[in-house]
Image (cartoon, rainbow, N blue to C red; front, side):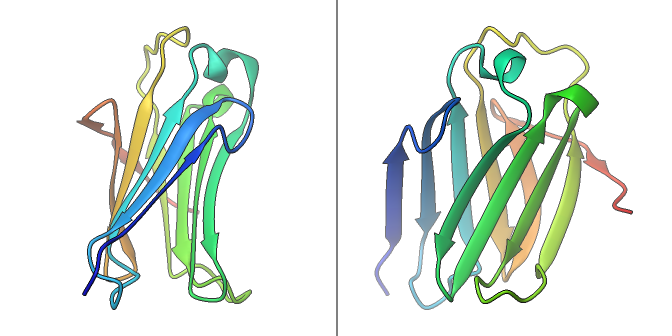
Length: 128
């Protein structure tokens, strides 16, 4: 069961790189998705959307909205079906937007478990 690891350099404006790590290619619903922002990206670009797609099997999106201090993470299949997991997280109150920031979405069995920012777990927010 080989590991899947793929990194994209500068996939969109404001993102230094994104990387997906799936430990077992027979379980696409378990792994880690990393998004590293460029310095000062949050103060210049809003929202920042980081997405990885492997049609029709896999789709993950991390939507960082600094203006409302929230991040939405969606995980599912890339076949136009609704997301299997949708979680909303709160950004910390004090963020140095001039810095680079690293976000990691951790998921298992098609469920988003956690989102970290610079190694710290973010608080989950209620989903409407």
